[in-house]
Each structure stands twice: as structure tokens, then as C-alpha cells.
Image (tube, rainbow, N blue to C red; front, side, top):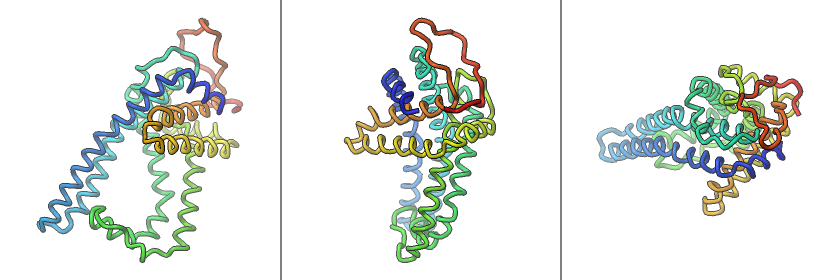
Length: 277
């Protein structure tokens, strides 16, 4: 998986860079609209017209940002996987594949919904345990710090660690769902089938998946430490390549063909995988 990811990064860095920049640009509208809504609520609340305005604005801001992400960010991110998968197989750089997430919008959207619901369910115990501390922050529309005095420190730490570990385990088992849903070289499948594919492909490979996730997170964080530029130029492209390397390794994808021997036909090999590597 790591060798495939590194080979993809070296072979297709310009394509991966464009995919990373497209993802950053796609995230701007939701962030800007959300901030405007939240600032409007804060202004109304401070004007004394409605004490609940900041909290309402914060909830609306989060909902609108989420909807914009679902409509724009999710497909663009999926398109990055599609472009990286094609490049990893040795095909010519296909910048148009970055839009593949829009062409397969329903399975991409559905798979993301499933993963979002699962993530929310994982962290729900931690939210419930911390609710009294979070309430002042929510009520103020994020303008006040949480009331940490309301936290039960030891139970919160224990539950937080359990939730975090559970999230990483589930993410390691489901991280191939979106790449499979959007893969332009394979037949289209539905959202549930994409999630099922990921669960089957990663069976027995959870620890490797967690290791890949930790490595992906590390390169992105190190990139941000380099004045953020490193995250755009190296961190995000390398994380994308590593994810696709893990995907292709477990997909049991065929070896790259010799130079000049590429077929114009999409690959129709076994899926779900028969013998994960």
C-alpha cells in the first residue's frame, strides 16, 4: 500500500496538487456563508433584539455549511480519488476526472451520509457527557468558551479516548467506500454496496488501515506546520496518494502495464476483491 501510494505521488504530483487545490477552493463557499450567518446572529443578539439569535444562527450556519459541503466539497473530494486512481494505474493524467464525483453524485452522497451518521453515533456518548459544559458555548453562538468546570474530567477523558479509537477503527474499515463509489475504471455501484465493499476489503487489515490513516494525518499536519504551504503542496497530495495506494492494494488491482501498452478500455477486474494484499 505504501509503495503504491508513494509511486502514485511521484507519478502524478501535478494532478494530485490540482485535486488538493480544487478541494480547498470548494470548501470556501460553505465556510464564508456559515461565517456570515453566524456573525449576523451575533450582531442581532448583541443589539438586544433576540437573546437566542446567536445560538439559532450557529445551528443554521452549521446546517447550511454542511449542505454546501454535501453539494460541492464531497463530490470534489471524491473526484480527487478518481483522478488519483486512474493516475495510479498508469493512465495519462486526467484532470477531468476531478469532476467524477459530480457524475456519480448519488453513490458519493449516499456513502458520505452513511459515514457521517456513523461518525455522529460514535461521538454521541461524548457529546452527551459534555453537554452541560458545551451548553454555554452553544447558547452564545460560539462566542464564549465551554464551561469546563462542568466537566467530569476522568469519565470525559475515558469516553473521549474510546470514541477517538472507535472512530479510527471504523474509519480504517470504511475509508475505501468513497474511492470505490467514484472509481471511473470500475462499474458504478450504489452507496451501500460501496460501504460493503470497503468493509469486506479491509477485513483483517484494520491495523494497516489505521497505520495509513495515522501517516496521512501526520503528513498533513507537518505540511500545515510549514506555514500551511506544505499542506497544499505536499501534505494533501501525499495523503490522497496514500489513500489510493491502500485502496488499490486491497482491491488486488493488476500491475501497471508497460509503457505504451495501455488499453483504452476501463478495467473490469474482480470486485469486491478476491484476495486482498
